[in-house]
Image (tube, rainbow, N blue to C red; front, top):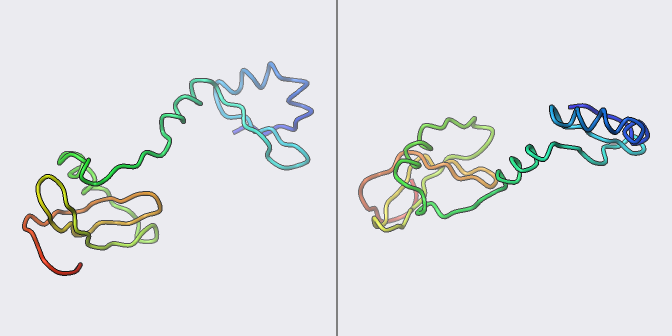
Length: 118
């Protein structure tokens, strides 16, 4: 990522505009990062990646299976068991990893269980 002072950016706008089509350009003001210039395509790509939340019951079996194979470093979250209720009934999911703004479901227990988490 390129970094440029506001004064230089103003003088060489055309150069940095072209550069922004290849990489982000950070413009500094008084020695601190102030704004970032991106191509319109990169901006739209990032907008589509904005956080989307959903209930675990909205995930398909294929998505749950895909997520089961994800390995997350231990320092990034805590592994727990959670109870899931959806159109298939109530079941326990072992090995769910709770992270800031993300839940990755591990292996599903096929039966219904009573009581607390394991």
